[in-house]
Length: 180
Image (cartoon, rainbow, N blue to C red):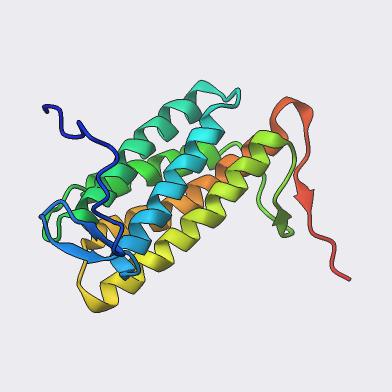
């Protein structure tokens, strides 16, 4: 890949449009652009989580996830392009099962918290859900790769599990909801 972004300040978006990878220009308010923004925010929150001290198994998995989220953004920027496959979804499921195996079954609802890294994992989970809703919003207008939609759905499950594990790390506790 050559120097694709040699100039960062282009002024091409000053009129309220942005360019897709296809060269087409769309409104910055287009649902596809909003979904790309939600994916970017999600990827950024993963970056914040990765800035914490994490067990290597989580660090390795989440580093891969960051690249796959960028791939999903590429699918949005290049309508018709497919990067995410069922194998990518299966990898998330494998990680989720492995990471969840060390947790006790849930008996109560868990609140975000339990330490800085755990809280960041839960925030990432919530942003994952928003990104998923945005992708489904695009999908209702223009069909998207169903594997990409499943990937983001499984990612929210994985983030919930990682949040639980991180809250319990080093003798910590999960924050359990107490109803009024």
